[in-house]
Each structure stands twice: as C-alpha cells, then as structure tokens.
Length: 115
Image 1 (cartoon, helix red, strand yellow):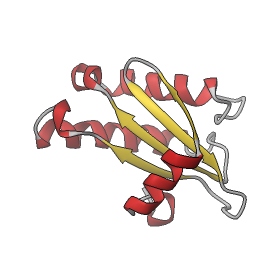
Image 2 (cartoon, rainbow, N blue to C red):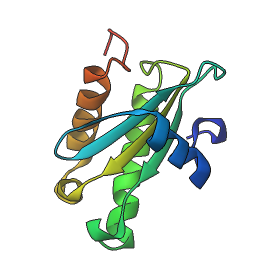
Image 3 (spheres, rainbow, N blue to C red):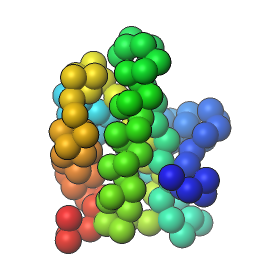
C-alpha cells in the first residue's frame, strides 16, 4: 500500500475512532470517516495480540492490505478507514477475509456499484 494511503499515527487512529462511524460483522470492525480535504482513501489496520502470535497477526494484515489493493479502484475517495480484526480472522484464508471486507464496505456504501 502506498504511503499516502496509510494511517500510521496513533492520533489519526484515535480521531477516526472518536469522530467516525462504525460497523461490524463477526470477523472485522470497520471505522470510517469522511475527510473532504483528501483526494484518496486512507487505511489503518489493527490486529491485537489476543488474535495470535506475530506470524498470525502479520498474515491477517497482509491479507487485508492485499484485499484493499484489489479493491482500490472501487473504494470511494476522501475517507479514512480503520479495520480491526476479531478472533475468527485467524482461521480465515485470503478469499474469506476479502469477502468479509467487501461485505462491510458495501453495507456502509464505501464501495462503488461495480464491485
């Protein structure tokens, strides 16, 4: 993921948590917030230590980054998006993670019609 498409700073994460909207399914929690000054979307990923060891957490983050890379053209611009992984994601493969992410994005109308 490009540097301009990432949320890395804790202050930015907290701002989205505090001022944004949220939606969840069993596997993922989505926080999002409209940012009119941005021309692109930004993504922050969070996978807690309760999910598993470092290998498992990094695999989940890799799956989420790849899913966003494949959906990049369909995600609406000018949004900050934070994804938090829940316990069931540690047993999921890439296609299941992508399907779960697409479900969240489409329910909250952050995904364009072509996806």
